[in-house]
Length: 315
Image (tube, rainbow, N blue to C red; front, side):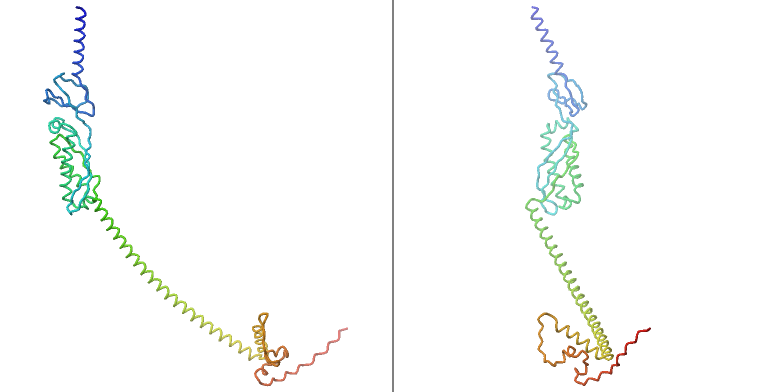
Protein backbone atom coordinates (compact mmCIF):
# COMPACT_ATOMS: atom_id res chain seq x y z
CA UNK A 1 0.00 0.00 0.00
CA UNK A 2 2.73 2.32 0.92
CA UNK A 3 4.61 1.55 -2.27
CA UNK A 4 1.54 2.32 -4.39
CA UNK A 5 1.01 5.58 -2.59
CA UNK A 6 4.62 6.58 -3.13
CA UNK A 7 4.40 5.71 -6.83
CA UNK A 8 1.24 7.76 -7.24
CA UNK A 9 2.86 10.68 -5.44
CA UNK A 10 5.94 10.49 -7.68
CA UNK A 11 3.77 10.40 -10.77
CA UNK A 12 1.81 13.40 -9.55
CA UNK A 13 5.00 15.38 -8.85
CA UNK A 14 6.37 14.50 -12.26
CA UNK A 15 3.10 15.55 -13.91
CA UNK A 16 3.19 18.86 -12.05
CA UNK A 17 6.80 19.46 -13.10
CA UNK A 18 6.02 18.59 -16.71
CA UNK A 19 2.99 20.88 -16.64
CA UNK A 20 5.04 23.73 -15.19
CA UNK A 21 7.78 23.16 -17.73
CA UNK A 22 5.34 23.11 -20.65
CA UNK A 23 3.57 26.20 -19.33
CA UNK A 24 6.72 28.35 -19.59
CA UNK A 25 8.55 29.45 -22.73
CA UNK A 26 11.37 31.89 -23.56
CA UNK A 27 11.35 34.60 -26.19
CA UNK A 28 14.81 35.68 -27.35
CA UNK A 29 15.79 39.19 -28.40
CA UNK A 30 15.84 38.19 -32.07
CA UNK A 31 12.32 36.73 -31.88
CA UNK A 32 8.71 37.67 -31.39
CA UNK A 33 6.02 35.16 -30.44
CA UNK A 34 2.41 34.56 -31.35
CA UNK A 35 0.35 32.56 -28.81
CA UNK A 36 -2.44 30.41 -30.25
CA UNK A 37 -5.22 28.85 -28.19
CA UNK A 38 -6.77 25.93 -29.97
CA UNK A 39 -5.50 27.40 -33.26
CA UNK A 40 -6.82 30.90 -32.62
CA UNK A 41 -4.30 33.72 -31.96
CA UNK A 42 -4.82 35.34 -28.60
CA UNK A 43 -1.78 37.53 -28.07
CA UNK A 44 1.50 38.74 -29.52
CA UNK A 45 4.69 38.86 -27.45
CA UNK A 46 7.38 41.23 -28.68
CA UNK A 47 9.40 41.66 -25.47
CA UNK A 48 12.12 39.09 -24.79
CA UNK A 49 11.99 37.06 -21.57
CA UNK A 50 10.17 34.18 -19.85
CA UNK A 51 6.42 33.90 -20.51
CA UNK A 52 3.60 31.50 -19.54
CA UNK A 53 0.88 29.67 -21.45
CA UNK A 54 -1.75 27.05 -20.74
CA UNK A 55 -0.23 23.61 -21.29
CA UNK A 56 -1.81 21.35 -23.88
CA UNK A 57 -4.12 24.17 -24.99
CA UNK A 58 -1.90 27.04 -26.00
CA UNK A 59 0.82 26.80 -28.65
CA UNK A 60 3.53 29.33 -29.52
CA UNK A 61 4.82 30.31 -32.96
CA UNK A 62 8.12 32.13 -33.03
CA UNK A 63 8.67 34.72 -35.77
CA UNK A 64 12.04 36.25 -36.65
CA UNK A 65 12.45 39.84 -35.55
CA UNK A 66 15.64 40.55 -37.49
CA UNK A 67 16.03 42.14 -40.93
CA UNK A 68 15.57 39.43 -43.57
CA UNK A 69 16.99 39.22 -47.08
CA UNK A 70 15.12 38.48 -50.29
CA UNK A 71 17.37 37.36 -53.14
CA UNK A 72 15.64 37.81 -56.46
CA UNK A 73 16.91 35.85 -59.50
CA UNK A 74 18.05 37.84 -62.55
CA UNK A 75 15.40 38.68 -65.09
CA UNK A 76 15.09 40.53 -68.36
CA UNK A 77 13.28 43.86 -68.40
CA UNK A 78 12.47 45.98 -71.45
CA UNK A 79 13.22 49.66 -70.85
CA UNK A 80 11.25 52.58 -72.25
CA UNK A 81 13.69 52.91 -75.19
CA UNK A 82 13.06 49.25 -76.09
CA UNK A 83 16.43 48.07 -74.83
CA UNK A 84 16.58 44.77 -72.99
CA UNK A 85 18.17 44.79 -69.55
CA UNK A 86 19.28 41.94 -67.32
CA UNK A 87 18.39 43.16 -63.82
CA UNK A 88 19.65 41.55 -60.63
CA UNK A 89 17.95 43.01 -57.55
CA UNK A 90 17.45 42.15 -53.88
CA UNK A 91 15.33 43.46 -51.00
CA UNK A 92 15.55 43.69 -47.22
CA UNK A 93 12.46 43.54 -45.05
CA UNK A 94 11.29 43.09 -41.47
CA UNK A 95 8.15 41.51 -39.96
CA UNK A 96 6.42 44.24 -37.98
CA UNK A 97 2.97 42.65 -37.47
CA UNK A 98 3.33 38.99 -36.46
CA UNK A 99 -0.43 38.37 -36.34
CA UNK A 100 -1.07 39.69 -39.82
CA UNK A 101 2.02 37.93 -41.08
CA UNK A 102 0.81 34.61 -39.68
CA UNK A 103 -2.71 35.06 -41.02
CA UNK A 104 -1.63 36.16 -44.53
CA UNK A 105 1.46 34.11 -45.41
CA UNK A 106 2.25 31.92 -42.40
CA UNK A 107 6.00 31.46 -42.87
CA UNK A 108 9.14 33.24 -44.06
CA UNK A 109 9.44 30.92 -47.10
CA UNK A 110 5.90 31.78 -48.22
CA UNK A 111 6.59 35.46 -47.59
CA UNK A 112 9.72 35.33 -49.76
CA UNK A 113 7.74 33.76 -52.59
CA UNK A 114 5.01 36.41 -52.42
CA UNK A 115 7.52 39.28 -52.11
CA UNK A 116 9.54 37.98 -55.10
CA UNK A 117 6.43 38.17 -57.27
CA UNK A 118 5.67 41.69 -56.07
CA UNK A 119 9.29 42.79 -56.55
CA UNK A 120 9.42 41.43 -60.13
CA UNK A 121 6.20 43.22 -61.03
CA UNK A 122 7.44 46.48 -59.56
CA UNK A 123 10.78 46.16 -61.37
CA UNK A 124 9.08 45.66 -64.72
CA UNK A 125 6.65 48.50 -64.08
CA UNK A 126 9.17 51.13 -62.92
CA UNK A 127 12.06 50.22 -65.23
CA UNK A 128 9.68 49.89 -68.16
CA UNK A 129 8.93 53.59 -67.79
CA UNK A 130 12.64 54.56 -67.78
CA UNK A 131 15.36 54.59 -70.42
CA UNK A 132 18.54 52.56 -70.38
CA UNK A 133 20.65 55.61 -69.47
CA UNK A 134 18.37 56.50 -66.57
CA UNK A 135 18.54 52.97 -65.17
CA UNK A 136 22.28 52.57 -65.52
CA UNK A 137 23.50 56.05 -64.65
CA UNK A 138 21.23 59.07 -64.28
CA UNK A 139 18.29 58.09 -62.02
CA UNK A 140 19.25 54.79 -60.46
CA UNK A 141 18.77 55.92 -56.84
CA UNK A 142 15.37 57.45 -57.58
CA UNK A 143 14.21 54.33 -59.43
CA UNK A 144 15.21 52.07 -56.52
CA UNK A 145 13.32 54.32 -54.10
CA UNK A 146 10.21 54.12 -56.29
CA UNK A 147 10.45 50.33 -56.46
CA UNK A 148 10.85 50.09 -52.67
CA UNK A 149 7.79 52.28 -52.06
CA UNK A 150 5.64 50.23 -54.41
CA UNK A 151 6.75 46.92 -52.89
CA UNK A 152 6.31 48.28 -49.38
CA UNK A 153 2.72 49.35 -50.07
CA UNK A 154 1.78 45.89 -51.28
CA UNK A 155 3.78 44.08 -48.58
CA UNK A 156 2.09 46.04 -45.79
CA UNK A 157 -0.89 43.68 -46.07
CA UNK A 158 1.43 40.83 -45.02
CA UNK A 159 2.61 42.61 -41.88
CA UNK A 160 5.97 43.28 -43.55
CA UNK A 161 7.94 46.52 -43.77
CA UNK A 162 10.29 46.68 -46.77
CA UNK A 163 13.38 48.56 -45.67
CA UNK A 164 15.35 48.70 -48.88
CA UNK A 165 15.41 47.53 -52.50
CA UNK A 166 18.66 47.55 -54.41
CA UNK A 167 19.54 46.90 -58.05
CA UNK A 168 22.78 45.00 -57.84
CA UNK A 169 23.37 44.87 -61.60
CA UNK A 170 21.58 46.21 -64.68
CA UNK A 171 23.33 45.28 -67.92
CA UNK A 172 22.51 44.51 -71.49
CA UNK A 173 22.20 40.83 -72.43
CA UNK A 174 25.42 39.12 -73.44
CA UNK A 175 24.69 39.26 -77.18
CA UNK A 176 23.75 42.93 -77.03
CA UNK A 177 26.77 43.71 -74.86
CA UNK A 178 29.08 42.16 -77.43
CA UNK A 179 27.43 44.13 -80.22
CA UNK A 180 27.69 47.37 -78.26
CA UNK A 181 31.31 46.63 -77.38
CA UNK A 182 32.12 45.91 -81.02
CA UNK A 183 30.43 49.13 -82.10
CA UNK A 184 32.30 51.14 -79.47
CA UNK A 185 35.58 49.51 -80.49
CA UNK A 186 34.95 50.34 -84.16
CA UNK A 187 34.11 53.93 -83.25
CA UNK A 188 37.27 54.30 -81.18
CA UNK A 189 39.36 52.83 -83.99
CA UNK A 190 37.80 55.26 -86.46
CA UNK A 191 38.53 58.19 -84.17
CA UNK A 192 42.10 56.94 -83.66
CA UNK A 193 42.62 56.66 -87.44
CA UNK A 194 41.23 60.17 -87.92
CA UNK A 195 43.51 61.56 -85.23
CA UNK A 196 46.51 59.77 -86.78
CA UNK A 197 45.61 61.19 -90.20
CA UNK A 198 45.36 64.70 -88.77
CA UNK A 199 48.67 64.19 -86.98
CA UNK A 200 50.31 62.94 -90.20
CA UNK A 201 48.98 65.93 -92.10
CA UNK A 202 50.24 68.34 -89.46
CA UNK A 203 53.62 66.57 -89.40
CA UNK A 204 53.87 66.80 -93.20
CA UNK A 205 53.01 70.51 -93.09
CA UNK A 206 55.61 71.16 -90.41
CA UNK A 207 58.19 69.07 -92.28
CA UNK A 208 57.51 70.91 -95.56
CA UNK A 209 57.75 74.27 -93.81
CA UNK A 210 60.99 73.22 -92.13
CA UNK A 211 62.44 72.00 -95.47
CA UNK A 212 61.46 75.26 -97.13
CA UNK A 213 62.97 77.34 -94.31
CA UNK A 214 66.10 75.19 -94.40
CA UNK A 215 66.45 75.67 -98.17
CA UNK A 216 65.99 79.44 -97.81
CA UNK A 217 68.49 79.65 -94.95
CA UNK A 218 71.08 77.57 -96.84
CA UNK A 219 70.58 79.62 -100.01
CA UNK A 220 70.94 82.87 -98.11
CA UNK A 221 74.01 81.51 -96.32
CA UNK A 222 75.55 80.39 -99.63
CA UNK A 223 74.79 83.79 -101.16
CA UNK A 224 76.37 85.54 -98.21
CA UNK A 225 79.35 83.15 -98.34
CA UNK A 226 79.78 83.74 -102.12
CA UNK A 227 79.55 87.48 -101.57
CA UNK A 228 82.12 87.36 -98.77
CA UNK A 229 84.29 85.02 -100.82
CA UNK A 230 84.10 87.39 -103.80
CA UNK A 231 84.92 90.35 -101.61
CA UNK A 232 87.83 88.41 -100.13
CA UNK A 233 89.07 87.39 -103.58
CA UNK A 234 88.82 91.00 -104.75
CA UNK A 235 90.71 92.22 -101.71
CA UNK A 236 93.27 89.43 -102.20
CA UNK A 237 93.76 90.34 -105.86
CA UNK A 238 94.07 93.98 -104.90
CA UNK A 239 96.74 93.11 -102.35
CA UNK A 240 98.54 90.97 -104.93
CA UNK A 241 98.33 93.78 -107.48
CA UNK A 242 99.74 96.27 -105.01
CA UNK A 243 102.55 93.88 -104.11
CA UNK A 244 103.22 93.23 -107.79
CA UNK A 245 103.46 96.94 -108.50
CA UNK A 246 105.78 97.52 -105.56
CA UNK A 247 108.33 94.80 -106.42
CA UNK A 248 107.69 92.69 -109.49
CA UNK A 249 110.83 90.62 -109.06
CA UNK A 250 109.98 89.59 -105.50
CA UNK A 251 106.37 88.94 -106.48
CA UNK A 252 107.50 86.66 -109.36
CA UNK A 253 109.91 84.89 -107.03
CA UNK A 254 107.16 84.38 -104.38
CA UNK A 255 104.64 83.09 -106.91
CA UNK A 256 107.22 80.73 -108.40
CA UNK A 257 107.99 79.32 -104.95
CA UNK A 258 104.27 78.67 -104.45
CA UNK A 259 104.11 76.97 -107.87
CA UNK A 260 107.13 74.79 -107.01
CA UNK A 261 105.52 73.79 -103.70
CA UNK A 262 102.17 72.91 -105.34
CA UNK A 263 103.71 70.99 -108.29
CA UNK A 264 106.49 69.09 -106.56
CA UNK A 265 104.36 67.49 -103.82
CA UNK A 266 104.55 63.73 -103.40
CA UNK A 267 107.37 61.23 -103.71
CA UNK A 268 106.81 60.22 -107.32
CA UNK A 269 106.31 63.62 -109.02
CA UNK A 270 107.46 63.58 -112.64
CA UNK A 271 107.56 66.54 -114.99
CA UNK A 272 108.66 66.70 -118.65
CA UNK A 273 109.97 70.17 -119.44
CA UNK A 274 112.49 71.62 -121.87
CA UNK A 275 115.94 72.21 -120.41
CA UNK A 276 115.61 75.95 -120.98
CA UNK A 277 112.07 76.14 -119.57
CA UNK A 278 111.31 79.35 -117.77
CA UNK A 279 109.51 77.39 -115.03
CA UNK A 280 112.77 76.57 -113.24
CA UNK A 281 114.47 79.84 -114.03
CA UNK A 282 115.05 80.58 -110.36
CA UNK A 283 116.96 77.29 -109.98
CA UNK A 284 119.56 78.35 -112.56
CA UNK A 285 119.34 82.11 -112.08
CA UNK A 286 118.01 83.24 -108.68
CA UNK A 287 118.15 86.85 -109.86
CA UNK A 288 115.94 86.23 -112.89
CA UNK A 289 113.36 88.91 -113.53
CA UNK A 290 109.79 88.63 -114.58
CA UNK A 291 110.39 90.43 -117.86
CA UNK A 292 112.08 87.33 -119.27
CA UNK A 293 109.01 85.34 -118.46
CA UNK A 294 106.75 87.87 -120.08
CA UNK A 295 108.94 87.91 -123.22
CA UNK A 296 110.49 91.37 -122.69
CA UNK A 297 114.14 91.92 -122.10
CA UNK A 298 115.11 92.21 -118.50
CA UNK A 299 116.27 95.56 -117.34
CA UNK A 300 119.91 95.64 -116.36
CA UNK A 301 120.45 95.27 -112.73
CA UNK A 302 121.38 98.37 -110.91
CA UNK A 303 125.07 98.69 -110.27
CA UNK A 304 125.85 97.45 -106.89
CA UNK A 305 128.18 99.66 -104.91
CA UNK A 306 131.55 98.20 -104.18
CA UNK A 307 131.92 96.79 -100.77
CA UNK A 308 133.55 99.18 -98.38
CA UNK A 309 137.02 98.43 -97.14
CA UNK A 310 137.14 97.20 -93.60
CA UNK A 311 138.08 99.79 -91.07
CA UNK A 312 141.40 99.49 -89.36
CA UNK A 313 141.19 98.62 -85.74
CA UNK A 314 141.56 101.56 -83.45
CA UNK A 315 144.73 101.96 -81.45
